[in-house]
Amino acid sequence: AILSDGAQISVEITAVAGAAELFRALTGSAPTGVWSAPGRANLIGEHTDYNDGFVLPFAIQHRTAAAARLRADGRIRVASTFASEPVEVALDDLDALFPATGSGTRTPGDTAPATVPEWAAYPLGIAWALRGLIPAWAAATLPGVDIAIASDVPVGAGLSSSAAIEGAAASALNELWGLGLDPVTLAQAGRRAENEAVGAPTGIMDQMASMLGHADAAVFLDCRSLETRSIPLGFAEAGLEVLVIDTGVKHAHSTGGYGERRASCERGAAALGIAALRDATPADLPRAAELLDEVDFRRVRHVVTEDQRVLDTVAALAADGPRAIGDLLVASHASLRDDFEISIPELDAAVEAALAHGAIGARMTGGGFGGAAIALVDHDAVERVSDAVRRAFADAGFAEPHLFTVTPSDGPRRDV
Ligand code: GAF
Image (cartoon, rainbow, N blue to C red):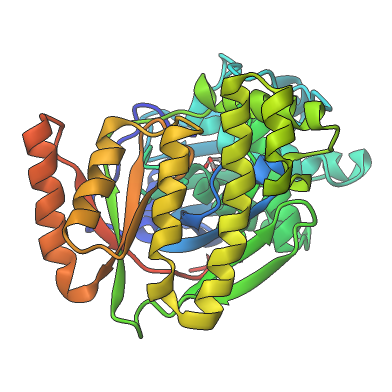
């Protein structure tokens, strides 16, 4: 999901320094600490997470930071470089602000309560979700908190700026409130905030990638059991870079197509008589073709084949290293474009231009309908591929894309 109308802070100011500075401007004093969490790029495994399937994302070097300090009065105040005004509510009022649906998601298309700007629903939703994990009597005794947020994760680029906010705020509150919760529980709280406070019907990939990322590795996640394995990527040793091509076309998962795709997948699982599409294999596709209409069938085919591509990618990385995964990335993109229909012309152009000029593999990354593509490129070819992509965009009359490389990086930490 995106923070609409968000302005990125200047790249010369790191998120950590920006958050501390904003905290001082907000409160007139220093924060107790600054916690940060990364955005993520998804190497492969798209729209498989809410189908209980497999994903292989990695945390990136771009981070969101939360500077925070407890306050005595039971109120929570959040400020962010995304917005000019802070938002303040009593902790006891959070339950009324985000009434639990019990189902895990609000109706697709619902947005954050009108009384709270969308950006603020992320940190407030985290506070609400964390309070929900402890007994009511204990929640009632939690002190208030001031939180100032700054980010250098590009917003709306499909790099999960939202999970980075959730991870930073959850890490700060976990420590300041002495909750002692583990990273998986914090990721689950992040997903709950996103689903029920913000109203985006997303899966848990992004929060898990942000909370469990490791340098030089991807997070291989089974979205049913929430078991993870750190998968060495070895990009640097192989002389490879991951080039992000941010199309600049903003997407939002709290509206529209994301929820429709999810509904198609649920219809597919119901028709096949299985709990989730994770339980289907490519051998079930002929039966799915008989049971489903043509569109739902293609949605199902994407998910079932994508799960297999994730497993194949993990195997290829272990057996032959990162140069062996290019074709799997390309096949993933074709499936997202043709079967799942969530690519856009800008993403297709980015992938085509990158491949035509030497990328080993390329695909759109993230939820789709905008955002970014990633291309696996030889270190020495980054400039050439970047120029080719820029030329392709100019020739097609698209706005100039934003290009940069990302590095598989560590998860949350306390910075100050
Ligand atoms: C978005 C969602 F937030 C994730 O949960 C995931 O479904 C992804 O889209 C698609 O793979 O990032």
